[in-house]
Image (cartoon, rainbow, N blue to C red; front, top):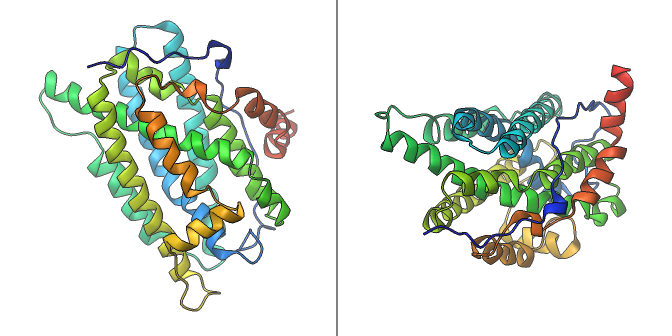
Length: 298
């Protein structure tokens, strides 16, 4: 059964482009949210997950391009590919800085690489129905994951508590530049899924798989950071601390995350109904890293 009731908000669609950025990490402290290693490391998991995950997005979408029959959607997907490749590179560049501060992420990133390259990678399947099924499963998984990247992007653009607590401005700019582009292109993955398949059962099934995998990988990454932080004695990550951080405003609230589930599973769901493209574009116009890259390129 296809979900044909979703209605995009046309005014929220703009042409997508990859933006050059330039970040300098030498002044960013280990705990870039002062006095709050748990928030710091919970968000730091992004640097471990996103490079491999977004390379996987790009790989899958390059396989999908020949199947797209709508010219405007093809343009959106090409713009999406460019933005995701830039995100992967920007987060990858944080990893040497973590190593310099005594946190070598290699044991964890090796597991993440296996997850995306082996478990979710290409399979030796006969041409035809089986190969197309696996491709569509991955397209649907990306749509589900993008629901949460857009959710996080919208959250970080509005997370004023991080500013009030003196969070490192360079790290905040990376997160908000990335988050703004996630909001900007939040409809592309879902529109592509609808274009190629749109089956509601597949949407529900792949949402459950994506949500479970993200929850597992994220808590595992937060535990890895807390246990290996050289400045902490018996560092621990817990759901209770996540919940308390959400109430303080330094992480998303558990309530907001739970409420996002029925929205994605609603038959009338469309990503353009969430977040603000105007807010995202306004941030991107003033991002210090984007401005620095424009200055370097001039």
